[in-house]
Image (cartoon, rainbow, N blue to C red):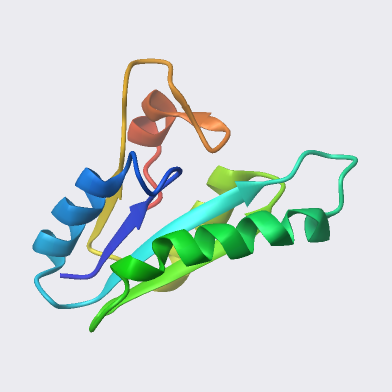
Length: 116
């Protein structure tokens, strides 16, 4: 099963990564993370954060598991683009409570209009 799991914090989201790894069953798993950059700042200004996030996610990499870190103005739009490109069977997101903002959108919006 092809899976994409979106993480915002590697430490906090370890559980959802473990679930995604089990569900992928050795097939194709993409661990995706987005660094959002506000208007007025250059996208390049987030490169140090992106490198640090890649290093933090590197221990999760292995056969069939890859990490995709990107820098964008709108985080959820970047995830939607990745999902359109990867065409996974399953998208996993960590969720804490109703109204919780994940990459510029709420979980309610994601459930109403899933990208896959």
